[in-house]
Image (cartoon, rainbow, N blue to C red):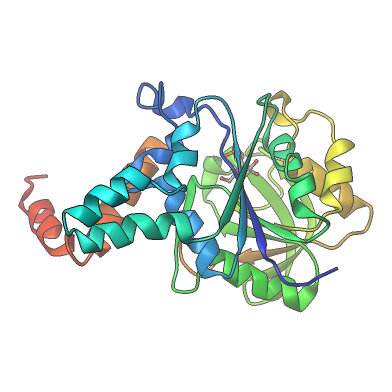
Length: 290
Ligand code: G1P
């Protein structure tokens, strides 16, 4: 089995109910953070990490995602005709970043079920999974950090971070032992435990490097939290059968753009980082009488 991670999977079939009515007729993955759709941030993270081939798992009404990563011939022609060279390049680059293919998750049966749709795409290779809702701002792209751990330990890697208090029950949670700074060997994991039952304060965040043995494990996974087929439960099956799993505390900052407040925070912080907007936006924020 090749050790190099060349493929990435983006589950994007969710209904985005937390953002209704904005998501009534357009995918949440296309909501702009400053001026780029949410999904483009993690897409770029994958490409910067060396990913060559991407599978986006879509569902009904996700057409705008497909259009976004395709060539937009008329738009490019118009920009070219008008001499808008920078915009032309920016638009063209989006369709050239990676080979992209799509499949549809016909039923919303959970993250494990979504990832199962990548079985043929993986062609028996290890692959990355990125949940676009989790944005990670980092010097070294998050999934690249995880690839390095995967290469060293030759085992699947999931991203983790510390979560204080009751919020932990919104995540998958690991029980783990630190084997080197920021790297943990996982002993157990549980999807969305109650605060009392959480085995630690280490939450799973939406970046995974998985091996193809996850697919038969998903087939054997029963409905779990929320009545859904959970990827955490499929990984746990393998773990209990002796397969090692590791977790990496990412070097960087994670934003939960799947949540309204998190989305606003991401928007503000990404805007402040921008060369073209940062200074004037900061002046504006300072002028607010809070
Ligand atoms: C998913 C995973 C969960 C993880 C979370 C990270 O949950 O099932 O283990 O902690 O992503 O964002 P979701 O947020 O899709 O319910």
